[in-house]
Amino acid sequence: MKRISWSPLSCKIFDVISVGFMTLWTAGAAVASITQRSLLAVLFMAVGTLFCALGYWTVKRDWKLADEVSDAGDVLVVRKGSIEARIAFSEIQAVDESNFVRPPRVLLELRQSHELGPQISFIPRSTFASAFGHGRSIADSIRERLPHLT
Image (cartoon, rainbow, N blue to C red; front, side, top):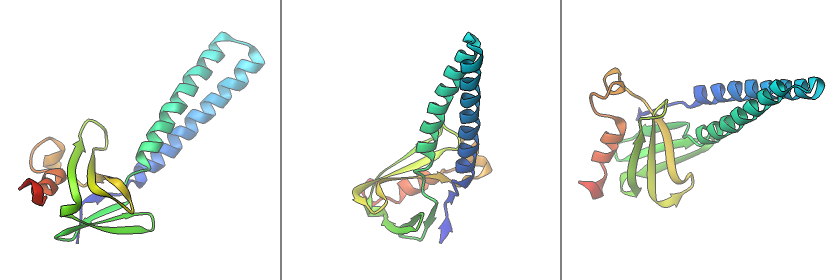
């Protein structure tokens, strides 16, 4: 089996640290606005609250990623937490990739809902060439192996 995904652990660690920092920022601004009754402190609290909301949205999006995706020839082996599923290429309806977010993601839409849900999202391993738009991406190689598209 060839592993075709990166672990989302680094994304999750960054998310926890950044949302934690934003929460501390907002709490500090709230304390300052209560004690000093300053308009600037209220502005800092409003900006901190906005950043916390954006951080929560980012965390919610990143924590839906699969932990590991491996290519086992005629199936993809997907692991998310303690659940491991084998997904045949015939079960995959569409393959989308989002290159405009960092790190890029691959989204597999399944024909029927699986034990991992109707969609599987993961961070693909990439080569140096594919990072700059050259060479085949993992999404392209999966797309080529879908029976209904060939």
